[in-house]
Amino acid sequence: MLRRHYRWLVLIPIIAWALYDWRYNQLVKEVLPHSKANTLTAHTTTTDSASSKRITPAQQATKTDSKHSLAAKPTSPQSQAQKFQAWFDNEADNVDRIGDDSLHAERRLKKVAAQLNRTSINYLLSTATNPSAAANQQVMAVYLLTLSGSQALHELADIASSPLPEGEVTQPDSLTETSKMQSKALRVMAIDSLAEQAKRDVAALNQLKKAIATISDPYLRAYARKKLANLKR
Image 1: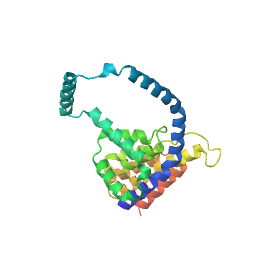
Image 2: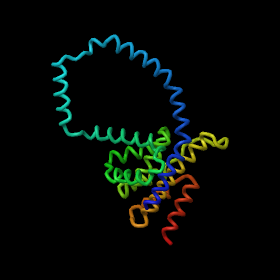
Image 3: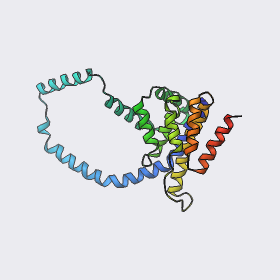
Image 4: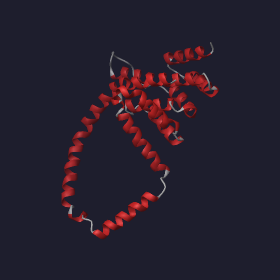
C-alpha cells in the first residue's frame, strides 16, 4: 500500500506543473499592475500616518496583556480550519520540491491525513473538484484523501464520478487537453484508492460500485470496471 501511494506522490509534481506554471503566469499578468499601484499607495499612507501609529509604553502594556489573554483562549473551529488551509496551501505550493524525500513526505502526510476532521475533508473535496483551483492543490487534495482511509471513501467516490471540465479539445497539447488529462489523472487516483481499500473493506467496495454507476466518461468508467473485475478474481 505504501509503495502505491509513493508512486502517486512521485507523480504529483509532473501532473501538476503543466497547469500550475500557466496559471501562475496568468495571475502575475493580471495582478502585478494593481499590486504596484497598491504598494505605492500603501507606502504613501504609511509614511503620512507613521506618527499616529506610535505606541506609548502604557498602550504597549495593554496590548501585551491582551495578546496573552487571547493566547490563553481555546482555539475556535474556525481558526483550526484556517490553520489547516494555510498548512495545506504551503504543502501544495512546495510539492514540486519534495524530490528524493518522497517516502518521508508520504509518512508525514499520512499522519496528518489520519487526523483529518470532517471540515478538513470537505475542504479537500471542494478543492479537488474545483476546476478553478490550482493544479498542485487539486492533486494534493486528492492525495491526502487517498491517505485518509475509510473516513474519506464517500469523498473519493464523489471525485471519481465528478464531471470532467467542459470544453472541446481542438488541438494537441492545448490547455483544454492538458486540463482534461490532469482531471482524469485525479479521478484515476480516487478509483485506485477505492479499489485498493475494497480488498479489505466492504464499504470501499460499495463506494467503488456507486462511482461506476455514475461515471460519465467512457474511459474512466471502463477503468473503474476493470478494477472491480480484478477484485472478483
